[in-house]
Length: 168
Image (tube, rainbow, N blue to C red; front, side, top):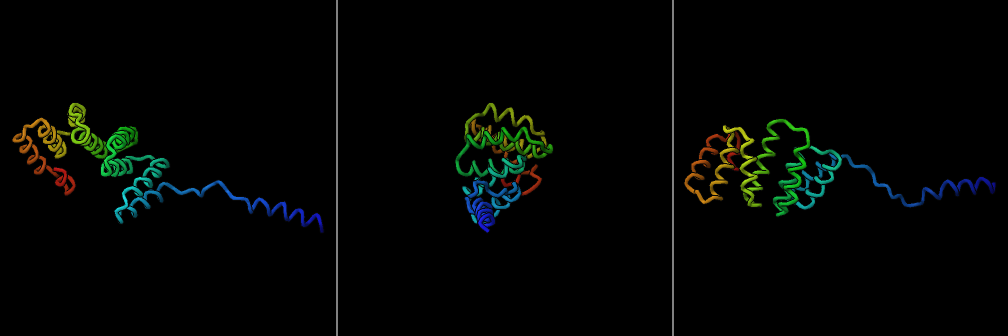
């Protein structure tokens, strides 16, 4: 009987010890939580969740959203770093062009690096509205306002969806 009690205690003690291991949360769950936080306008919480999602499943879609949120919070250097890392992720051509566009826009507007922005703009097809939009921004930064307006109008006419129209 004594042996049985000792055996029960030995088996019961580890069950009472606190566990240091956290439950695994899949990256898709972190992304879903980020979307839910965005729906209630909690950008800082969404940034944390997207960062966790990217650690578990690095992909260009999450990287673009994460960098956009960083930009919205004024963390331009971290956004640039995220864009540059995202170049190593597998992507379709359209996603790659979006990445080039967003990094070029960040370089031109917030980081005043017009040379880098100009090089990135050249990677876009010359019929893409984002190409004209970047040309407009670069011309505006160079104080060539009339030419910038012309390029902006070209971007608007070439825009294929509401997002591109909004950027233009």
